Length: 310
Image (cartoon, rainbow, N blue to C red; front, side):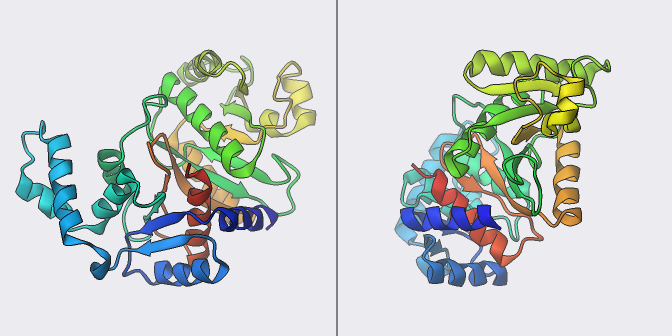
């Protein structure tokens, strides 16, 4: 798919360093071979011999100092936490020894997100951690020739209005940074511009107001049903004044249930490639992986993470 090739080519031109903590996963090891062959990134595969004892001791102490207000945590407990290479890799990323972090082939999203939030920290401007997928859909005329960002599909179960606004802004920035797209954002709902009522609709309309306050130049609209968001002819009927005009390339789902179900259906029924979950709102670029991922999925997440590195 054209989008995937472009991402890999752009990453190869930058050649950033990405840490992969899951050294004993076969898919990860296969991905490393592909990445090195295609020179997409420099990879640090965290095999036991790559873990420096002095650095690990230093990371343990630094982690303890940051989180010692937690009365249930002591140095012994921190050392136990750092038996998992996730935390060593996350601290390497925090320190800037590597440019980004990719894991999740054998860890749950909760485990990956927890290690990153505690080690890397959350962007003060965005204030929450969420996720998105780059969906590359073959033979598709919607979005940008079949490329659409879906968010949030992996982290926040029921985002409130402010969280939805933050997700929209973070996902739009990724669309621009990684794909070079001018983001056109749709806040999705079962209602289009008051066609239905309900608490969920109110949440989305409030999110629109907040997003416009936070990012006045962002092209965003809501609440919109999915067809009104991506099909110009339908948008002309349902919401003719929408600035998005049925051409959204960033879709923000009202909750995790809708987003997760939708991305998996599009991936399977439409033969789409889903790159992600790409974590948003952290101080450093990082990507989670589905535990059902392939080696190619890992390669693509490494490429995207490389493109997000400053």
